[in-house]
Image 1 (cartoon, rainbow, N blue to C red):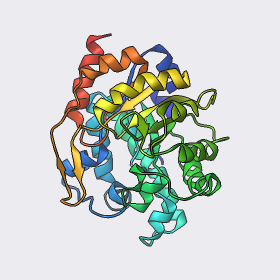
Image 2 (image 1 turned 120 degrees about the vertical axis):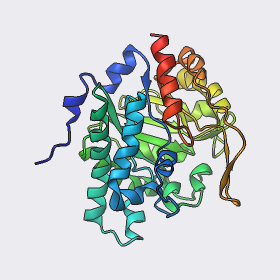
Image 3 (image 1 turned 30 degrees about the horizontal axis):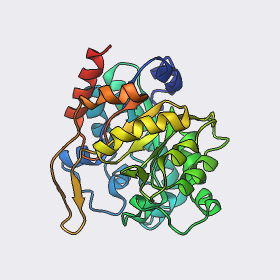
Image 4 (image 1 turned 180 degrees about the vertical axis):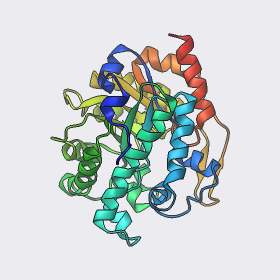
Length: 310
């Protein structure tokens, strides 16, 4: 018997309804929590490999964030694709089961917290499948139609697993955002759209107002914003996202440290501070949290700030 809790049994409201009423807290970086648990993420599948090899570790990482106060748990499917799994000898049926399993793991972990929460199924960019850092550059040389063909099967499979929302996240450019919005069209699940950015532009160099404006008027989109970026850049982007899209804003930046690809290590200091949430809220943010290197302690601090502010 499947004992995975259903969406209806875990949240009395849709995520969209919750965002209309106040601020909702996301989780933090999944990879850093898995590494803290002793997991090896050196494989090109990154955390997605653990869906097959150690699903209990995925569930434990989600549980850590749920206990820290996260109300939305983002699945481990960011780098999980049919193409990526195929390169590791995992066929389409097994890959589909692993994608669905990512939703189930987050759903079960969230139930541990014993309060209302939601599951966001991560749909990462095409570049994440390449595992070469191109998700932070975009402009892959593919057409919108080709990107739709890549994204649609995974988005459909994740939607069939009944998450509360699809997280179209770390999107580097407008071309891929357009493809993702087309790929999820007709799927019976809301989405949020969040870009990776550098300064006041997308990672591919396009104006943020143009990028955020792409979702204006798209009813399926419940929030627009940024993730996996410098906290200072995120601060500036929230107001632009609210103005250009007319939507609630989602914001979950990195810790502020920088990844040294050559040395394969993080450098610099952390600039992510829980007190930033006040400015985010004033500018229109309703989904707030952290991305790479932001762990459960930082999410707990955000939960405290939100609770103190009502």
